[in-house]
Length: 225
Image (tube, rainbow, N blue to C red):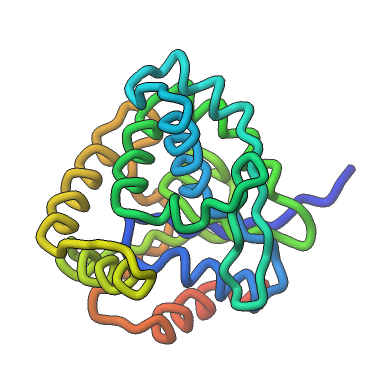
């Protein structure tokens, strides 16, 4: 019987710091890292490039199942993302890409198409999975589960700073509105709605720095650190 690969899930809405915490934890433990949100962003980007309406579930689902995607680790810890052998790292990090991802992620057949793909990332020695339904749907038996949260205003300011630093256009007011709309869409979708797993540790990151949040996560994972 093969050994079960340990998984730690870090869920939450956009802008709470789950991506940063997940990558820090993956590097600290020497484990693999899954950015599940990137798969939905890539699905939406691929659909737009092929002229497929994001609302057309019948066409978007098979596209999700056949994505030619590659995540290439880099020296600075930020994975380079390739779609059809073309780098799209910045393309999938715009505010619009986040909105688009939320639209395609609401389709049950798209989520089903990406489910096994996400589970296949669980390879020895372990996996840190970042997303919105990692602890509830994709890895319900994860060794540890976390749910990060923060106010929409705080998250919008963080996102604004990230976009400006990348040289991308951003409007703070629009970001707050988009975040609130996306939260509502993610919480109310029929397939795997955004919510903490019953056994998840919830951490409000609104007034906490990355170091403090990382320390709190580590304190809850003493059996693997």
